[in-house]
Image 1 (cartoon, rainbow, N blue to C red):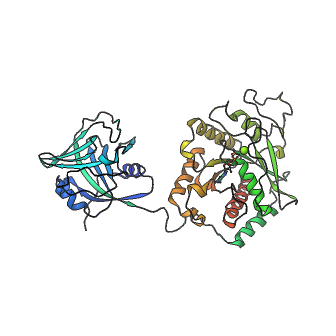
Image 2 (image 1 turned 90 degrees about the horizontal axis):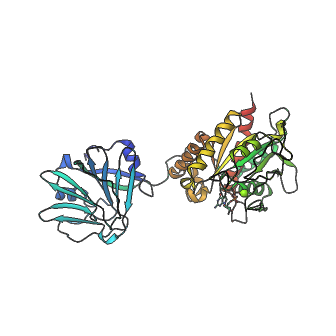
Image 3 (image 1 turned 120 degrees about the vertical axis):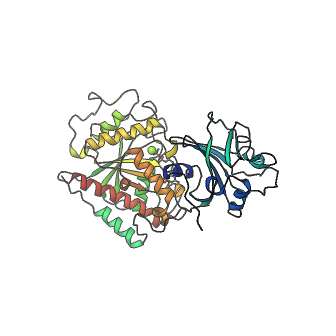
Length: 437
Ligand SMILES: Nc1nc2c(ncn2[C@@H]2O[C@H](COP(=O)(O)OP(=O)(O)O)[C@@H](O)[C@H]2O)c(=O)[nH]1
Ligand SMILES: [Mg+2]
């Protein structure tokens, strides 16, 4: 069957499919310039095709249209079609706005008397006349639209079938073994690790990220893996304002009561939207460079200065931070403020300048990713989130590590352990590589 080629370019299609809450594919069924501008033909071409999206191409290249999650009604059906999933949209080179239906009972209807018209509420009307289409746009309460003023004519109309694309790829894009042997090997690597760097016995990795991202939980989780049961030390929420405001280093022990391994995790106050609500860039850099003494209590109004108590003027290698871990919550990426994103980027640039390796720990992946953890690297959705996190900080995708912290469970489990252990090993490898020269 020849379906023809859509007028839509790839970039616009990408923007359009992002309007759906799950991944979808589009399949062209009808094109006015090819099949003729007639509601009858649209109906014929879209029969039994499931969910449909109507696209009206405007002269400027923008596309207006509507999504119908229900069935296209018969031509003689003059009632409104009820559809809770319907929405109308405008997609252009730099914008994509959409208005979900408010009054679902009036989502869609066709008029086939003197005027032949497809209408989404009263806000988007496509009239078929003299073998062309006229788009009439208005603002209505059915979709609660606030369209910009549009006075362009329509150059073509298309209807596409919208089908669920599923979230899983055929093959994972990153290899991961989910076996007990692999878990034990990772654990051995972590416990036996010795830094390849003269004069350094402990790798100090600093957790940086917004409040609630899971920094303190990551420390507890790594401890839990090695202790073989979930530990919940009161790391979370310490400090007078409910946040960790002191610089605190947590040695990690090979087992309960055992020797510390060569990785120390450092926890600190979270990054806020402003310097008043969170750790400042200045203080974060002071910690990274090793000027802040252990236990130093950060105050938003008093940045760490050479005359601050315990200030290390000339920090030794073991006082400095050897790896920066940006901790971000996969479920909240979209709501992070511009100010926070700017701070992350600046911290990335400054740390890169200092030659310090950086990784992103993307937490809450069990909520943001596939239900089966084994599919973590086969999920389109999660990959997109990992790409977003990489972009947000400014690091390549391979520096983003998905993790699930132990948050509410009582027992450790293999899959969670494997993600946590591989993140911990990755921290150590990245330090070895960075300090090789
Ligand atoms: N479901 C889930 N909850 C998490 C995860 N990481 C942290 N949490 C929860 O998120 C909240 C904030 O975590 P916390 O470690 O205190 O964040 P911090 O402010 O960055 O130190 C706590 O209730 C944690 O139990 C995770 O990976 N998955
Ligand atoms: Mg904390």
